[in-house]
Amino acid sequence: MIQALKSEAALGPPSLATAARIGIGGPVGSGKTALIERLIPVLAGRGVDLAVVTNDLVTKEDAERLRRSGLIDPERVSAVEAGACPHTVIREDPTLNIAAGDTLEGRFPGLELLIFESGGDNLASTFSLDLVDWWIFVIDVAGGDDIPRKRGPGVLRCDLLVVNKTDLAPHVGVDLDSMLREARGVRSAKPVIATNARSGQGVDAVADAICRAVLFAP
Image (cartoon, rainbow, N blue to C red):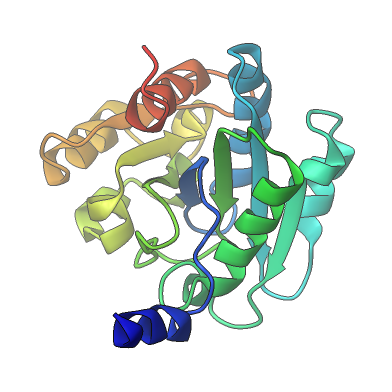
């Protein structure tokens, strides 16, 4: 018994996590922050009590953008500076993000949902399940219709793949229907949702997926 207690102590204090924790990752410019800006009022309108942790390399730019947006109490937005590869703090060693989430949960009792936005990364970016319960990977049409065929771990392993900026398809020579078919093909039965975060198209479907997956709401 004493040895067991020593082992637990060596691991440090347990996470305070009671809120569902989800990740949103993807390459630079794919529209992660824009998607979060659209999700905040949709989820809040459904009565979801939420907060956000953003990740950047050496700035707090995404956090400041959300704080200035007027969409969420600025105190509900925390920033983590990765200081290295963005995937380090969401996969190899997520302790900074876990601590940021715990701080928000301590500050706002009753919090139901924590959104962790990764810093922009490549197609190999994935989230540790020590950090999140469920995660979204965002790619965009302007990044090229060959992204699904590259079969990056982010595309293959995420719980939900979002193909954003659908409005740009005709302007960048992308066959959107073909891109979506290929995305669904490489992901087997895992869901794919097409969005235009700028206009809000598809955002309700993303919110539906979040509510079903981690909030157990219809």
